[in-house]
Amino acid sequence: MRTTEREQDYAPIAAELDALLKPSLQDYQPRTPQPEKRPWQLSYQVFVAFFGGVLSATLVAYLNGRALRLSRNQLLAILAAGLVGFLATIVVTLLLGRASMPEFLSPGDATTLASRAIALLTFLAFYRLQKPADRVYAFFGGEYGSILPVGLMAIFGLGFVQWLLVKMIVAALAG
Image (tube, rainbow, N blue to C red; front, top):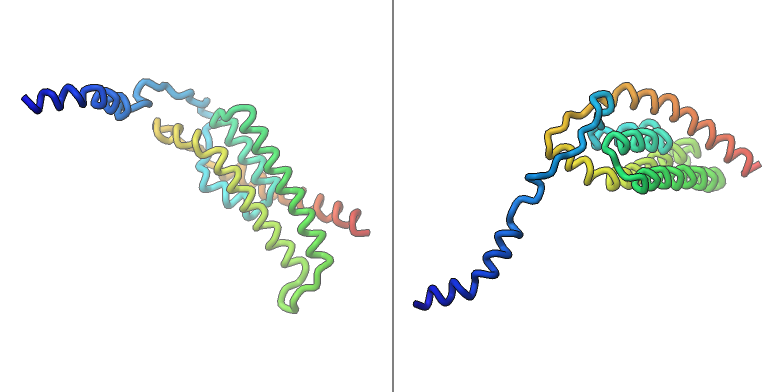
């Protein structure tokens, strides 16, 4: 008799637990991207950021965000993070150009290292913005595209543009 009273006492809690433990994504139908617009794996974007800089990483993250169908606000956040990273690169380049460096480290080496560190930090912001949509895409078995062609174009194209813009802006501000 005691077990039936106990079962009756716990019946509402058991019903709540059943609802809580029920899989929530079983009826969800993801929006599948077009085959030519498959997203890239997030982990490969770090190479674009390291070798190409902030502008390259921003372009790749933005295109990947569109393929993952991120909201307009998330895409704008990617562009804003890229702008902040680019401005930080300019400021750090200005500051390092005026600082005295140890003999083993030239100002050019210091700015290259700082630029890559800023690009990697910016990539972390991009990663954070894209990760939830990427997890849903991977959960439903989405196939990833190859980042190689776009990544190489971004590295060599926008990497050079970033280098040139930073040199021109720093020269204008320092001179």
